[in-house]
Structure formats: structure tokens, C-alpha cells
Length: 115
Length: 108
Image (spheres, rainbow over the protein chains, first blue to last red):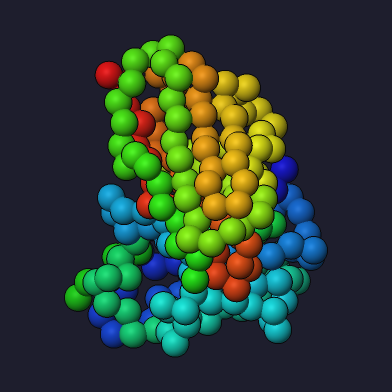
């Protein structure tokens, strides 16, 4: 059974870079896309980006100038970097396996942008 | 971008009621429409993929239908454990995946 777990700092200062890792267990990362999705408190879901390999990546255009995703298949991990963060980037960040539909999801990690 | 809308934004129904949530896409999305259930404090859970494919373990009181731009999630007999927010999501455009704004379901 595939499981995903997000990890990273829960607090990031404004203008700095948010960095998260998603660790995948129970299956190989090959043959699937992997996505990040975020959710501000009390609000809906926003897709951040998806990747298959290092050369097959799509980002949400609203975040594209600040987002970088990467993958380390040898560690069964993929990562998210979001630069120049502001309070608007405060959210729960989820990673998920992406087959067009998202399943399964990680439990999510709360990231707060504050000085 | 393909925009997704949902109605209603919230509803309150009695146990045993039939509940219907609609999702509309700004352009045709063929069968590429999924539904999720999110309970408070939890990650979303995939309920239905490709309009009507019920995921394993999801109760049969949940069903999905629709085509083109208009889609429906139906709960045939609302149960207390169905209290959650429901989201639709399209993947017709794989360069930008989008969710509906969500429908909150409560018990009356």
C-alpha cells in the first residue's frame, strides 16, 4: 500500500524559500506523476504542480515564477521549493500520487509564513 | 485555464435524505472529472474517478454522473459520517489541474 509523508519546516520567514519533501513508501515512483496541492486555512484546494521526471513538469501558472519541483527516485522522494514567500503562501501542503486523480494523499504539513 | 464551479456552496440535510451536488466546467472535459471528500482536519480522499468510477471501499450510496461540462455527485441516503466538504477536479487539461471551490455538507 502506497503511503506518502510530507516533511519540512513548519515556519518560514517572509521573502525566504519554503522547502518541502514528500517521501513515498510502498511502491516505486516510476510510472506515476506526483503532485503538490495546498490549502489555506478554511479555503479550498489549489494544485501547485506535478512531475513525472525532471524533464516532465507542470506548474500552476499563478505560482510558476516561484516554484521548483524535483525528484530523487533513488530515495523515493520528490520535493517542492517556493521562493519569495508571503503570508498568502501560508497553507497546509499536501503531496499526492497523480494519475489525473490524486490518490493517495499525504497527511499534509502546515506551513506558516511569519517573521 | 478550465474553471470549475460547484453548487450549492453548502447544504444542510437530514439523515436518510438524497443529496445532490453539481459541478460545472467552463469547457467540455469529456470524462476527466473526479470527486473528493474532505473531513475536518483530514486530507482529501478520492471518492470517484472519471465521472462515475467508485473507488474501492467507498459506500455504494455515493454515485457520480454527467458528461461534457455538467456533472453530479449524489449521496442516495445521507449518513452522519458523510459530513464533509466535497470537491470536484478536472484533468482534461493536464498542464493545469483545477478543483471546484467545494460544497460543505452538514446534518440538519
